[in-house]
Image (cartoon, rainbow over all chains, first blue to last red; front, side, top):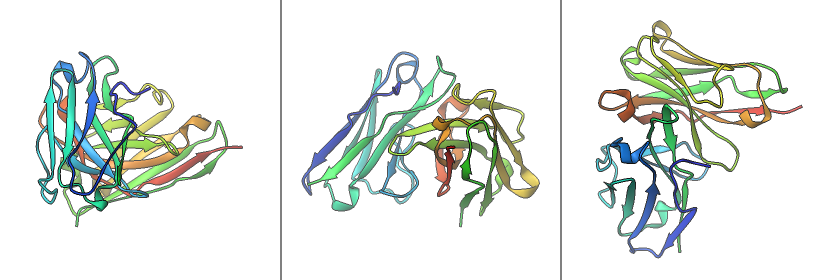
Amino acid sequence: QSVLTQPPSVSGAPGQRVTISCTGSSSNIGAGYDVHWYQQLPGTAPKLLIYGNINRPSGVPDRFSGSKSDTSASLAITGLQAEDEADYYCQSYDTSLSGWVFGGGTKMTVL
Amino acid sequence: EVQLVESGGGLVQPGGSLRLSCAASGFTFSTYIMNWVRQAPGRGLEWVSYISYSGSRIYYADSVKGRFTISRDNAKNSLYLQMNSLRAEDTAVYYCARALGRDPHYYYYMDVWGKGTTVTVSS
């Protein structure tokens, strides 16, 4: 059981906008720790997608955006493309566990 | 090119040991914090361990504390994970990941990942 809760799956048609939620608690996101997002394409290593809640690394399209509020965070993908089909993970820090934590992951399917 | 290459994975019996290595290149290894992250088959990501620049600060997930030891050799641009008393639930792909972020370490994220090395614990 992950301390950061993500929906197991989301889907959308090409061109649509989808969001993935990441719900935590007062010991992680709610404590003010940053949320980061990773994309894992099938059979590959994770890739950093969003860092520090809202920032995109160089090379990540601006179709991807992040937000954070209270004890949760969200990843939004606009103009959905077939290549976006992947698993997405949020990550933060948890004071109760004294360590970094990941969400359980969300499988994104492009219809 | 910034690169991390893991090695040392394999099949090991329960209770056995294994040492993973991660070779870094393309950046100044000694100036970066490093982590190990694992992913069990069909499961999500799990942070395993953290080591500071010089190795003076080390943290472990509760699931591996007392059994795993992280270390680094900055002269060899290498990160290691010594895994003892292995259990079936340690079966996973182990990733070496470079950490970046604003201090303190609570805000760190992983900006570069290796391709992983597979550890299978089974009799």
